[in-house]
Amino acid sequence: MSGLHVVIADATNRYDGRALAMRPLGGTETSVIQLAEALARRGHEVTCCTHTDGRVVHNGVTWLPLGAGTPASCHVLLAVQHPELLGAVRRPDRRALWVVWVPTGFRRPARLARMWWHRPRPVFVSDFQARTYPSWLPRATPPLVIPFGLPAGVRGRAPLPSAPPPRAIFASNPQRDLRWLIALWARAILPRVPDAQLHIYGIRDYAYRFGEPWQETEARLGQFLPGGLPATGRESLRPHAPEPRQALWDAMRGARVMLYGGHPTEAFCLSVAEAQALGVPAVVRPIAAMPERVRDAVTGFVIPDEATFARRAVALLTDDALWRRQHEAALSLQQGWSWDEMAARFEARVLGRAAPV
Image (cartoon, rainbow, N blue to C red):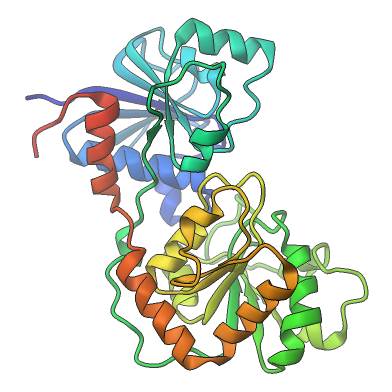
């Protein structure tokens, strides 16, 4: 049986498949590349239309500029998040909307009209999205939830022989409450673990190319420092230039705990999912999709109040037995799906037709 022609349309950034190894990317762009390549490996013809500059063929996927380069027809059009993209292909056999962000923003009249005109099948990446998707929009019953896959580089690791030093890591968009975390770190965590460090990997510029000089890291950190931060608090922070994915995963493996307060716009949170798969316990708040990423009291803690959040962070930074239990539990329970496994489910439930394997 031959594969299908799948067009994925995404307007979030200027990128193609080569960007994954060349510069920092957000979770949306990373996931588009991973799904496209996994579907191509399964025998489908995959075309991705983004704000790329020209035609590129990479790892079996054809990348074209949105607009003039978009195919006129395909078997399945997968629009990423934006209803405006549901018309990117004039004559698709079927349309689906990949809801990769919080499902808001559909109330605008033009978007609402497109949703009802095209009636796409929404595909969610978390149960949180499915629960908060407006009931008055087209939907499948029951909701179709297919979580993101995880890259091979984070899955299947062996337990570490010993606990890392008291090192915490933040690896998300700094706009998502990094200032709050630094304030809590300086006030309630660092005084109890004076030799602890907070390594920050979220300060990034999507135009940055790996290996280029990064002179602005310290300056960029300044905008996220809370007022009145003591010198000891500032000295414990370790901001980093953007790193290739393998280097970032190595940094996660070298941390004892990932700290992330969460944010109302967090629809999945790949950074916490990857850290958990690597065996890194995490302390998060019960916001948006975060309770789906961490198993409370098993692979980390899901904590609503600041005082308990700080105590759990201190415990993971200092208690080797607790760290060991949660480290091994994360390696056992939080491996998720590979992108090939995710693509197989996507193929069966969205494309409705399997390619030869």
